[in-house]
Length: 244
Image 1 (spheres, rainbow, N blue to C red):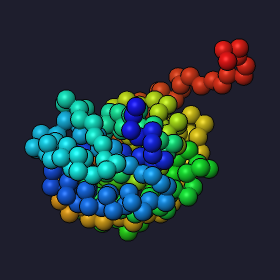
Image 2 (cartoon, rainbow, N blue to C red):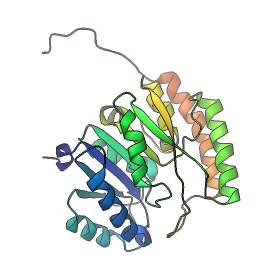
Image 3 (cartoon, rainbow, N blue to C red):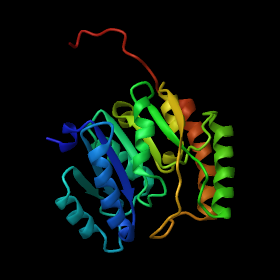
Image 4 (cartoon, helix red, strand yellow):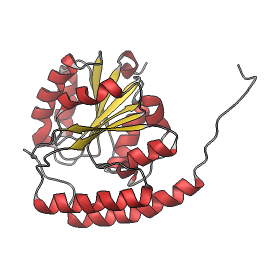
């Protein structure tokens, strides 16, 4: 039996070469798990083929903490693949997503969870961004381009703090780069999206995986892929059946 089925809320944490952040992740997530407004809550790490020696430490971390689980890829496959694997492995009614850099706070899940029964996706909007100038400007450009191309109306689609109804998360069409379009994908499948302001903090350890080039060029290309897929997305509802 998949152990996440025994929980009401699973927090998926994709990570790649975040060894320096593991102690903070253990501390912050174990503390939040005990007080989350949806109980019981668990944590599912998805190790995207880390090469910094942190994978054995992650396994030890999960062994000593109740409600901590992990998946480890054989090789690096990217954030979209890590999210897809986490969503598919989750069997709790609700699934959350937070980045391993902890620039958003697990405690702020409690700002999103009260709305999770009424919206298929509740996503954060980062307030008072603590990123550097180049990162903030590139993020603003990328968000504006995505809104124009997708029409999703979401101010901060890249915010790494989200709560989804698991049934919706597991049916989202995902391929490389689609982590950038979770709100638009939810809307495409008929789901409702709510935006809620959350706090933002500076990165304290580890190295950012994105720079100016891949922060702008990737979203630019992926928007065209999304529009192509949206036009060809198969959507249907079964009205009647005698299958039981």
